[in-house]
Amino acid sequence: MKIVLQNLTKKFPGCGKGVREDVVAVKDFTFEIPDGKLIGLLGPSGCGKSTTLNLLCGLQKPTSGKIFFGDDDVTTLPAEKRGVGFVFQSYALYPHLTVLQNILFPLENLKGKDRLSKEAMREKAFEAAKLVQIDELMDRKPSELSGGQQQRVAIARALVKRPRVLLLDEPLSNLDARLRLQTREEIRRIQRETKITTVFVTHDQEEAMSISDMIVVMKSGVIQQIGKPQEVYDDPVNLFVAKFLGTPPINVFSGRVEGGRLMIGGDAVLDAPGAEDREVWVGIRPEGFVPDDNGPLHCDFRGIEVMGRDISVVSANRFCENAAIRAIISADSRVNPQGDTVRFSLNPDKVFIFDKETEARIPFEKA
Ligand code: ATP
Image (cartoon, rainbow, N blue to C red; front, side):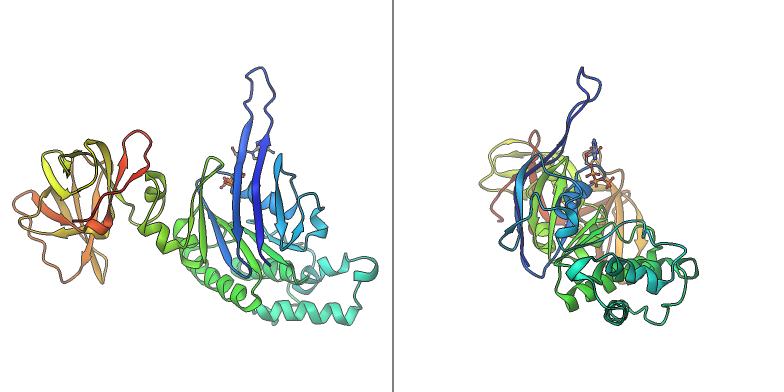
């Protein structure tokens, strides 16, 4: 089922007299989540991710705007009538109940004509448990499970009522690195199998990029960019988005456009026809540097970090915001520092320029 957010705004009022300002946690969100897709809401702490989820599930009411599930306007519909499954950061399992009882819990709360027989409930609980591969653990208590298994129970509990929409709020943040990776792949598999439209909240860009069909990058309650993860990475609309996506992060230099050339300090690093003269931020992805004995960009060589298939050439440049510049190149490339200096030419597809004031992307023709 598709979800449509229409001019959705949530304002938390301050207490006046300048003591506490109003907070606009979600500002004028308008976008559509296509049926059966997994959307990653991504942004730093406080950007409004959880508020968006709370609006979607009905735990909070918007100040203005509308939410549609399919063709139904659910803006004022109570949470329990929306058909939403919610998985929180803390799994919030009932410690005194077994896995089976935890998964059964939402079904046992159904009233009237929705109430199922005991056998039907058990069948549904086992179906959900099988999907997340914990059907062997049904008699255990949460304390007898690993973190990853507990998270699966929470997902099974959210799925047992066959929700129309699945909302996941930082569901992996309590897991260690290896389990995080494994569980995020599981979530992807479960989502593909159930085809439930899913919204996944995280502040971890790598996590969002790896499992989402589409990402929504947010900052201070405002959507910055929406698109397929690779498209947003390759074509960021502003400096914030460019900096937020990518590991190692993009390298940001203070530079200027002068007579159709992009300058960093005294180095004319690229031709930038079509861009007018002005001060700019220059963002260079780590994979955009090509070691080149005659390359135009001069950096102070610091060392090489071996990463296996690739190596990272670490350098510095006084016009660069990053304390260390990391250039990722293939392990069989040759790096030939001349004294303390390493020189690079740049791959223009991996170089972005941004207005110094507004930080909006400035297009330039690639020579
Ligand atoms: P995190 O990643 O830290 O969970 P988030 O992106 O989910 O952050 P929200 O929890 O949605 O952010 O909060 C967005 C903004 O709204 C923050 O500035 C927060 O302080 C504010 N906020 C959230 N809930 C309330 C509330 N009940 N009353 C007042 N302000 C609130």
